[in-house]
Image 1 (cartoon, rainbow, N blue to C red):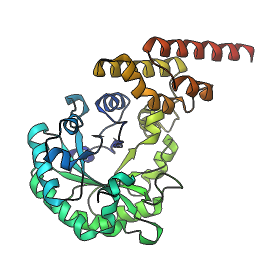
Image 2 (image 1 turned 135 degrees about the vertical axis):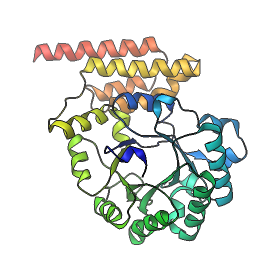
Image 3 (image 1 turned 90 degrees about the vertical axis):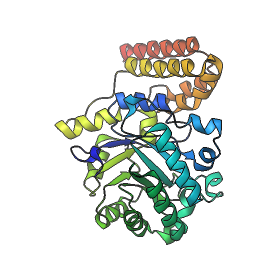
Image 4 (image 1 turned 180 degrees about the vertical axis):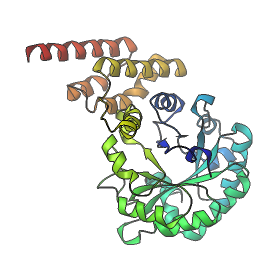
Length: 328
């Protein structure tokens, strides 16, 4: 069994393209996330030693346990990419992406498109398990391609037979994308159908949601969009599980300090303040959810170009909120 399942109920940060870079993973680790997975990485890019692809493989020791997630549709190339990653980077595991619903990935026979082709899925899993050994291999799936072809239990058993050591299940179909509700009944069926750990994913937005999800027989949880807007959700879940008490979100001042720190770290990594802040705009939009005056903040974030400007926005927001509290 993977060691992080032996003495705890691990909380995973879901791999999200353009979001879960090494900076955000480290920030979430500080907030209580247990297991990290990189943004998905093209096996073809690794196989061809594409310089930009290689950047997605970077992580630091503080992130461990950390896995590198690969996607693609060619079993031989995926196997070789897994072997190369294991040799170059020594991650704690390789993760296979059979869940991405984005059309540009699906159109290249990657991600969730493979859920429609179980023989190909089996060939990929066997090739990667063999090539990565002794490094463990895990997988991320959706419950199926569409409502009429939900096949998660079949897919999970097949992956288990191939030597995959844990499976994360997102409770939506490919056709749902990120709309509608996650089907936790199917996730529970998958957890009951295999012996290996199943990690549940979908619609966990609070500590109470997490506790309900734990009752579905899963051995871990994976959080994505909720962590984008409130990375401290990992800490809140652990506190609730340990004490039964709801941990309040950090004070607004602390939230702003966290956001500014994230942006400063990004500027240091990129080197160009303007470019870094441009790349952070969508991330700032996510942080604004749940903050007071969120609509106004989103307008300001759409044009923010420097740390100084962000600090001005923070100071203005804190002053206005404090004034409203006094007036009330």
